[in-house]
Image (cartoon, rainbow, N blue to C red):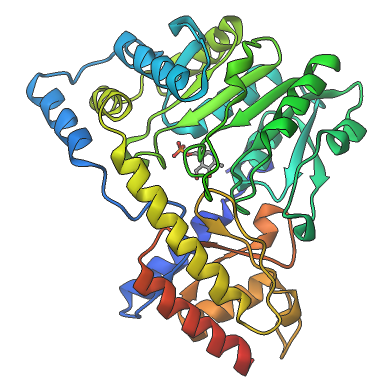
Length: 390
Ligand SMILES: Cc1ncc(COP(=O)(O)O)c(C=O)c1O
């Protein structure tokens, strides 16, 4: 079968590849500690599930407006206003099938062939493939582990050329958990304005901030011309399978993204939309409970990883990932590279982690600590034994 040039620009996500390998091992009876999957281990809160069941009983099971129901768009802009002081109108809100669709559609709507897109490294795997698919060229912005993977507007500025169309930032970051300070975010928007480029802020993990940090969004700025926000209910409300995300931004941009949506998925699932309204308008204490638990787990996993000789690990300020440096163990005992190390860790120690190269760095692995404390303790023990004996 002859395939298009366009489709050959994307490849399978390294995160999904690990999930598949881990599933095969588990199916063969192996007791696995899985740090691979990037999704909450908590169930979707009951009030949200009840709203979905009610939606089915009410026969709310047909097409909705492609851009999402008015009720859900109102709930999204209200929650965003409450949490971040923004003032989006419902025409400036598009409901999407997960945050991923919002990112995909925004990229498709603004990137022309050969346009440059500045992307801090390490990055979430899908940005790279989405930009490539849209015909753009990723311009990587290196960040340093010793500097807690900080993104600085002054470094971004050095990469701006006449071809720059878009800057993508994700704070808290997947895979590092790094958080861009509020003042630096303001500087990034000021830079985007002054150089007339678009800034995309992916707020997927915006509610998961540790050590008392307050959630922040550039949405409060009122800027529509240089800012597109993408958001998701997947992680905040443990709703990964429900597939609800959104975009907030200029009406004209969103209406073009909507055109693409109207010819691909149409509306997000009607039932999920009712559940999402309850998630956003109902009690928020489940979010706080999850956050407190993630912070306890972060403390445990960072301490455990740092206790393994040779491993260094930046302290994540948000999200639920750690990104330790395993460089000291690469090329040891015939281990060719990071992928080979991850394969050995899976096959010999039965611990699943995601290799760094998919996120743009050669010497790290990503662990998701959205898993039980028992799993974290067991996984740390197995890793310590594996690395010490390597
Ligand atoms: C940084 C980031 N953005 C966006 C998403 C998309 O999430 P969803 O499509 O489930 O809303 C993810 C999912 O892992 C992510 O890690």
